[in-house]
Image (cartoon, rainbow, N blue to C red; front, side, top):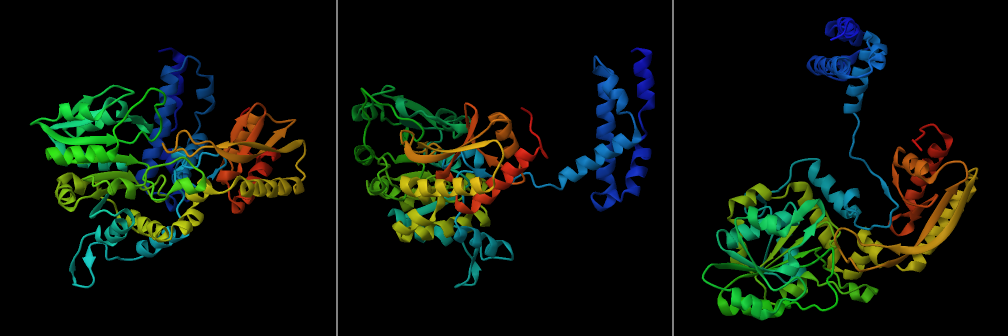
Length: 477
């Protein structure tokens, strides 16, 4: 090590010196002495590593100062006080945007969370009998009413639901599945991997594009534990294709004494055909086939919180409920409260379509979206932003979240172009606003899709543009 580096290392401020300076700034009102000491050590160690390893040490030399280190520690601690999970405006037109939290919750669902969370609750207490109860009882009846199922269990997401059912019904046995349904969804969730973790033995049948009933029938044997059908939520195979309908599969399972499971994924409870969207099998349709068990998500087309819902035959679900994994994967009181607040909407399907935000975004007419876009344009023009060109454009939104992959939903966009600032810089500036606005970028303009924007979010868009264009929080070009 050269002499200059040795000299810089000796010049590093002592931990106690930094802490003494921070104490004068009342640092302990923000964090304990233990945390302050740990953060100080972290900053000093980072400087030490830079001096030892960096090819150029001039920058490190300028930061070897007790005031610099104290400021760096103070900033780290203040950052810990900031909530990093925050609300954003989804202006992308992807309705169930996985990266942006998928389904926004209804006011009723949020109110239920508040009521349950502000005090104690009867989560597992039967008020009528005055003894321990079952948490699933709070939503079992409404789920069964809406789906026609005999019983219901809820876990923390649909991947967990699939894992739990496979492990219960096919541990150490074969689970028969079509090659065309060995799907992968976001986050590298792959059916073969989940089957392996469940200790089920995957038995592929058919080909990628064609699987017949006879393929399943030939595969059934003494080691068969389950027939699995998987809804290809995020893609479709078109052309020379063939698949077995759920009614035929269920009948095959009954003849052979083998349970049949359908992983529906998106979990649609509403007939989307009447709104001009492509047909999506509803949970009630699938349950009506006489199938043994169905799994689906709570936060996709259902429009509620993240959850995996398992419905089906009572004897099958009793076996699933007794699986020790069920305890590991169970939902908490907040998810349960939000799910209950969401499901109530479906007692009146038309109400669900108009009051659950994801469904409203899916089913709202293009004319209504256009009117909302025109209102936003009017408000933006009243701001008299310098150098902005604002325009109305026709385009298409998507369902997202692995749902309705072929559906192109007509929409209207507001295009914003600035002659002085690049679109990428505006996009970054809006992303760093107090309430971030997530937009599309095309050529040299940002695009705001009004299908996923509500009128009460206009204020956030205007404030974000003000901040972005003022240069107070400049984003890199």
